[in-house]
Amino acid sequence: MKEFLKRKNIVISAKRYLIDALGAMAQGLFCTLLIGTILNTLGTQCHIGFLENPIYSNGTVSFTIGAAASAMAGPAMAAAIGYALQAPPLVLFSLIPVGYAANLMGQAGGPLAVLVIAILAAEFGKAVSKETKIDILVTPVVTILVGVGLSALIAAPIGKAAASLGKVIMWATDLQPLLMGIIVSSVVGIALTLPISSAAICAALALTGLAGGAAVAGCCAQMVGFAVLSFRENKWGGLVSQGLGTSMLQMPNIIRNPRVWIAPTLASAITGPLATCVFHLQMNGDAVASGMGTCGLVGPIGVYTGWVRDVADGAKNAITPMDWIGLVLICIVLPAVLTWGIGLVVRKLGWIKDGDLKLES
Image 1 (cartoon, rainbow, N blue to C red):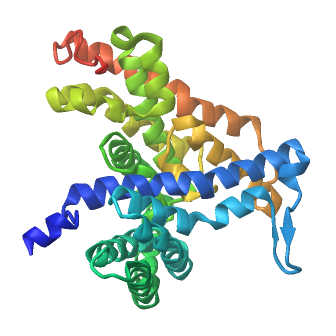
Image 2: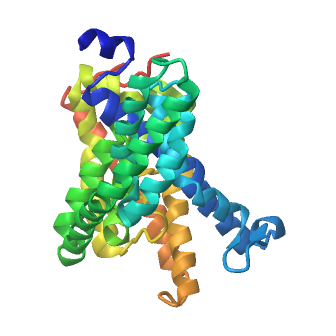
């Protein structure tokens, strides 16, 4: 069996499924649901005709460019997962209908359903790939039957479980914004810097509302925090690559000296409750944006799109100056100032030395 799995490149490991696949799934979500939402927001707010106007209508449903992109989230996630699992072409392409079915049947918790089902379907597809002379029939049939069959059986329960857990977190945050602001901000921020996908976790849990706002705060604290904290070592290139890219670049340094993580993590523990208790910052855009932080400014853009939705739905009267002040303070100013100040103390204690935060070339 070991030889067979090795020959088929089926690696059963936490890294393959919880790091590689989860990270790829987040990219699939980003390129469809999130980009689609951004395009729709640009179209409606800037009155850009080709983004605002439907490109197709069947009489019941109309699609803008953004809506068409968002509708493909399930297929994109599944294909991305297959790519991460190094699935052969016939398996990879067969995962497209699998992702559509799993995401549709999983409903609010669709991303988690896609993750589980696409992994299983991909591995079954890889197992039969090129084992028969009619591979072009057998491999797609097995992949699709396994994937869609599992979707019919377990997508809804997985989706409901994920959505329920997300609702519990959001309920607890509404009930105890101070404590949960600290916990959610710190945990999601740490997940963003670890080699796992905080965006995929937030999407799988459908994490929005105040909890989503706390998650945004934590992610921004890690990214902006590390960018500022390591400025003396990495200058402007490091500021941009971490502040607008990812704080995950610091993982090798964190492994060598875990104390470099103190300042950004403490900053997230401070900005989280400020977001929930003082500024009442809510993420009512797409849940995936809750775990993106300042990566391409997706987190703040997600908060803004949520404001736009709330105004359109009548849940919010208008976007106020205080909304903007809170967003800028929580996402950029406070993470930079707090991490810089805490970092000075940590450096003075000798816990961080010059060069400890230098990014690898």
